[in-house]
Image (tube, rainbow, N blue to C red):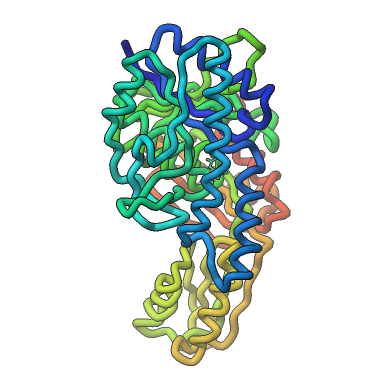
Length: 415
Ligand code: ASP
Ligand code: MG
């Protein structure tokens, strides 16, 4: 019998009524397949738990997401939903049991708060599945070799699901969420956005890391590495109904429909830092970005330009908004070593990106993007590109306008 992994996010598990609906979907699949289910905590629960640790951390000095006890607290939300779903399944007459990370076991490294799964010995799980029992697995958590609970970073249940699917050699990893698939743009911003029937791993990875919130980017990375077929489906179906076709995330070769751009993504979680009056000589960039890297600040887009005065340069780069204050502090504290005159930070920026594997073999993709933005009077502050995406940094006030303009410019609203 084939194996299937089903994963349900926080909004699908938000209360008992929804968990019952989830149980219905699980029971339908369990009738003719071996099913492992991965669950998130109830919507909002993890935020609440994180807030508790913030309070306790302050009292205790400086504990935070890298702490073992942070993980002990924030992993608890998934224990509750796993247990509840297993109970409801049993009440429906479907044999089921809950599995916590350490019981599977899902082994991780010891980077608490952002641990990586490194091994899942699946023999026990397979034994239970073969005995006809649905395995309800708590997402987001694992166990270190030292026997401590570890969590995978916010949104990490998707990664649990893909890792379990890889370990079980499951036919598919079905990620049930509150949208019925991956769209060409956020439908809340662009009403003409369309569901993609298929999207490649690489495109999905770019979309996830460029702001589309459907899947955790690490889960896509893992699916790509292990060739796990992922489907994104809606859990919001009529009682007794079946989910729609959703979006399949798969190898590029399996996608017959050829398009140049597959989607437009955006992120407002950006801040731009500008350094003015830098000395224009070798070693300056290394000085700046070395310090930021040492402090674990992720830098995304970078541009350097000549200043008007001879021998001077300006540098602009972006970091996550959460890291902005810290990044400014770091460069300021090294002002004399780096040798700049002034630093400024702008948090009112957004990154808008177009993504598509078709870009590799087509010219003129950037021209279309810049033309569409110019026509709407949207000024581009920074540009960055990869083989399959172009991102621009713009004034955050124009985010919606830019997303819609680009969506139309690449014909994504046409069926
Ligand atoms: N409950 C965790 C979070 O909110 C993990 C997840 O839902 O994926 O981040
Ligand atoms: Mg999620």
